[in-house]
Length: 294
Image (cartoon, rainbow, N blue to C red; front, side, top):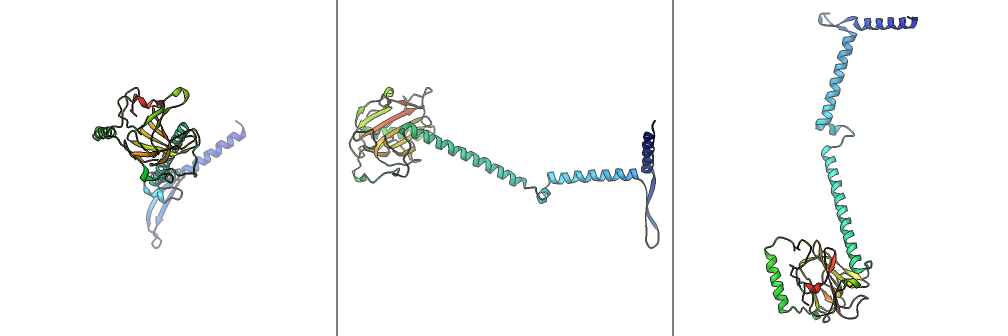
């Protein structure tokens, strides 16, 4: 064994002897020198006691911070309820923002689909009234229309379900209102891109909603003029183009037979007063003459 190892061993022995050396802690009365408390200690005992006290203090402090409201008074610790409320508000704002973006995307897609051009904003009002005198508006509801309207209202009166389609998306079971009375001058032809029918009718004739629904678009396009689109169910739309005026705005709820526009001659793709009417089901155009008698 070399000299350094022997020296280290001696140092360790001396340290252990010091740790085991016994001391006495005496507490005495200062005036009478009467002994009150006498405790025998070693350095090793003091080390163990101090270590145990430290562990207990750490445990108690951690418990107070983790499970009691006292942590709110510690700088840097926020209220748990406040943090939860902030988190919930962030989730709500994110979900609202996503819903708004989805709605805007849907409206933009519908505009592109039915108008073919970007919407002109700031040039004309959505509800246009300057060119039409409402005294001249003709609401020529025939006896057949009135009977159909009454039948539709009675059938929907006690039904809590939305307008239904057959499993394959057929419209055969539906009762649709004729938007106008007139002569069909251009028939449906999807092959040529004519996704509706053109109905020639009297000027200032009122255009009626084909069924209950909500207006999802009411505006102007260069080709189609004043256009109004009504959503009847999630997968069914009706489109009314070339109007001279719109009587409803986006977001309005309509009933079957309610006037929604005035027959006109607006837009580039028109040569006289008429209504271009389209019926869409499950994202595909459908021939309106199969379901409505004009």
